[in-house]
Image 1 (cartoon, helix red, strand yellow):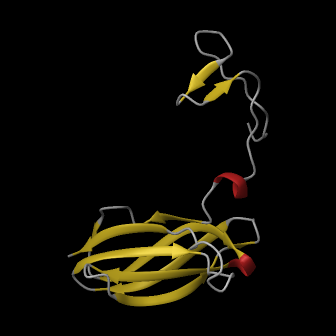
Image 2 (cartoon, rainbow, N blue to C red; image 1 turned 90 degrees about the horizontal axis):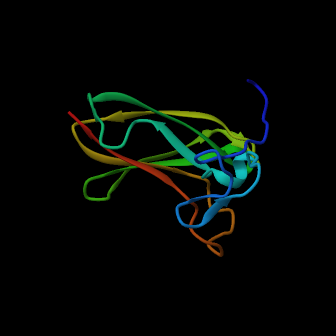
Length: 136
């Protein structure tokens, strides 16, 4: 407990199990660095499909971005932007928590959180986490 040690995956007491048709566990496996396996932004609260009360809604999560700045966008059911802002999270590959408080009225919405596009439009679109929810 509290240590990051390699583990050996055994199925029926034997090594060499295959998962998803592509991963074979032939020897011990170690945890990869979060920046190698996690998306840059993860919304942990508000849940997908949640129904929440009108008023203030706190969107929380974990993320990393250049200089720690993530962007959030709230859109309505017609894909119109309602509000946009930024939050601070972890920086440069180190993950940290973020939180944004949004004012919401009854309706259907999607909130997206993602790192800003540092390429000036030259690179791929930044990876976003999105959650659709309803306000009553």
